[in-house]
Image (cartoon, rainbow, N blue to C red; front, side, top):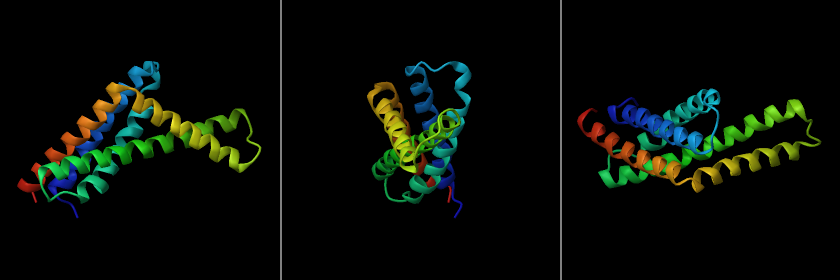
Length: 148
């Protein structure tokens, strides 16, 4: 159901994921030419997580919505790591053929866990994700109350 809170949650989580991704790419010293694709992927995943995870938890109180925001941020970053792992396996497959399907799965898991580890190890990225997600939850709750 389309409500103001759910729509605000989707757009605000999208912004939180963009902010976290920009700090991650800056900390990891990616070339600026490589920035658009991960930022667009993070925006799409953030929108989906905000709509489904955060938007579904609105309607309680501001603190609960802030916590739902953090949960949606965790879901979004895990899905981003999974999609990044799949992308890495796809690109690697063109250069080196994997011997067995389990090698592809191992590559996806290893790459995804590396992305998660890098995001958690970077204080700026973690702070941007937590603060942005919590703020998204609180502001989405506000919009949920005034615009139904």
